[in-house]
Length: 382
Image (cartoon, rainbow, N blue to C red; front, side, top):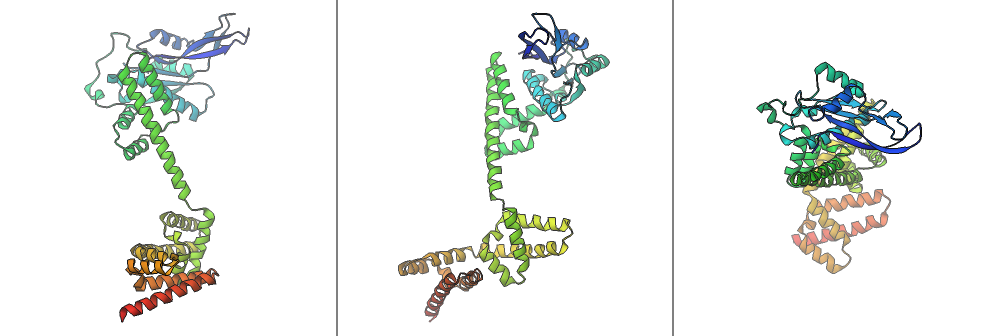
């Protein structure tokens, strides 16, 4: 596989309007192509000639220059390109370069790319440091220490291929930012194609598998993020419950509020209320922040209590949903929790909450069911 790489371009001559195709080298390995290094030095690498009239024009192309002997990588930034764009472009070209290099020379220096202003900037560094490439037969012996490490890109691909299961794949994606580049999957697929063209079937399969895994893990992360976003409370609901909490000045009122809004004990809502309190503190609304902190601490205690009482609450809910005498009898026989003080207190809170909401009929229904349970308890105690 050739290391140097030319991009195919279609052009229209500004003089004679002839349309033609040509190629411009955007990756040059100094040791492999000293002829291209000469064109960099005389500033003609990206000059293309119209086959019809001979007009010469320059293509505003990037250039990634590699010198293995001096362990240098230079990136010539096209004129006028914004920094976020040229950084992404440089990273993509680096992926292509590393994929074309033999495995034994994929060393850490490849991750240290020096950006320069176009071809003139790259040519200046080549002259100053004599970065013309080793040429065939002139390559120096590589230090054993250099072989101990691989570039970040190669390490990331190896970690991806070695990951066992969805959790490890997500860990790799989160710990290897280089895999999170927008074009990373496309580049891996292109590297696989180049490897197949040169008969490196095993290398191609590795790149293809890495591309498949990267696609899967990015989809998994997107789904997880969408799920998390869907469970986040709306800001209006957070503010409404924050002030409802501030109006609850006793433990009984707080418990009634929780009965009305059980989401107050859910982790997403607790986290959102904590953020609301922190923002109030940043805005010097100390009384609101302190009041919410106090009530959030109380909600934490209630949350622990409710977790302990979860069987009781489930039994009360089943009891209230029973429609017939036979269903009530069956639930009473199955759920011993209904004849405890905890169940009686839960029904009392639910009745009070119904009254506070203006639902007198539901409050009366709860009162009837509570009274019946008390009769059952009294009969059992005799």
